[in-house]
Image (tube, rainbow, N blue to C red; front, side, top):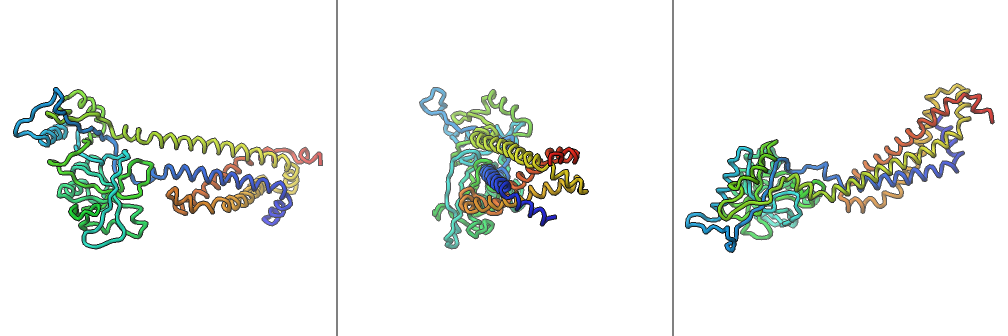
Length: 410
């Protein structure tokens, strides 16, 4: 049967060559669209490294001396005393689970402080490039950083309180043959400055700047001194379901907003910041999804027309096979086998045209050859499914015609 099928395909080569070319172009088009769509969204399938739900962020502000609302501090109350008093007040609120100060530690912003991290006890030609995120120890509880070694939030918090830092996994560092776990327990210095030395307490999941972006470097969580360091934001984690209640209370209660000349303003949920940050990405992804859907519908209709026309030409052939004793299942299997054989030839053409460029595209889009190969199989599967659906109805319709009627004009 296989030999007869190949012989029939060979005999009808003029008609089949255009079908093969069409299938090759269709596979290549779907392949490219899926590749771009996956490149845009692959970050969604990776570890985010933090939990943005139920987190609210406020900006830190100071009342200037020129302002009529400025309060002249007494001899015992300074800026940091006022700040800590306000943060304690926030932490004692019944809706709040944790409060932390941060500088560049809040995700969904495009601030990037990339600094090299090196061992202090040996020379290494390969540096660990880290995005520096500064926060008070409670930042672990606020953002729920995820330890890769099994430590809990309390242990990570205590590590920061001791002045130690947290490093994340890093694809770039690992691609150079290094393992970030080698830093555990080691003394490192930051930015080539031997005076800035820290002990690495643990390895955490990468904290990316948004859900789509694939960070090329790692993450370093560096502790802020709660009594001396300046912070640009205050982040609060509230109890699940109490976000709106806390926000309304904060906006109405001035004692939660200000302590003397130190005050907090512009409260936003991290989910709202996330939405604003990723609006352009979401729009681009939706556009590609629409293009993908339109392309698939167009491909299906095109294949439906092509195979409908082929079935109309083969009504008499199907009738003769029925007269010779072939069952409906056998006839349908032969029709599908012919379509799948043509698909294989089309897939070879598409592979020959696309694969030479996959190496460059993979490097540019941050994809491995395995991912590209999987996408090719997905594109072929979509086309194969379209072929099956395209021949299903016209084949059943052709097989329902009585043989005498089907071959009366022969």
